[in-house]
Length: 226
Ligand code: DC
Image (cartoon, rainbow, N blue to C red; front, side, top):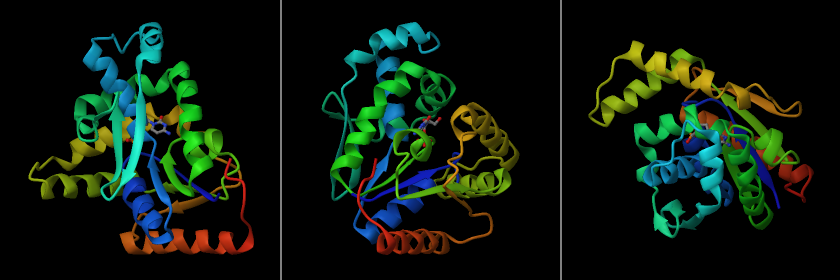
């Protein structure tokens, strides 16, 4: 199997770039953030105090998270129920990034779930610790980033297009806050990774860079994604 690990801060365009590259390469796109979000959703729905790591850890065995792949891309299931939209709310985003993703037991609980997907499929997997912890032997590791201002600018545009205009300065503050919250994972850069700074690059250019790097690696090697 061939694995492409894409890590980087929130808003760098990881998911859209990874999705497009996976489609072009015929790989499965795995959004690992969705799994963390699903754990947060479960805790919120069950009324577990997410600020209490012991309580979250105790409730973990009840979480049945699975991913399904079909025409519509990745669907995220919690106990068999499709929660793909529910995990995108602001409440779930904050609960995940502020609390749930920092609990070592949560991270440990999810290692195998993610590795198993890469054992069975050629994957483009995006997250924060894919190249460092989850798939240290991925054939291609990319750290996708962009300046905080560029990420805030893209997010502001996206929100405006979605009919939810937001103030750039406020969005920028949120971007900086998310970076700080995710820094424990983001500060660990794989030594054999490629840094791809997308500031000033168009979407198509980034996808093209990524797929050509992948094709080059595939020609030169193969085998063992984990
Ligand atoms: O990529 P995202 O915004 O959907 O991720 C949601 C949260 O989960 C984010 O705060 C970072 C965290 N996360 C993580 O710690 N490790 C991953 N592999 C993926 C996401």
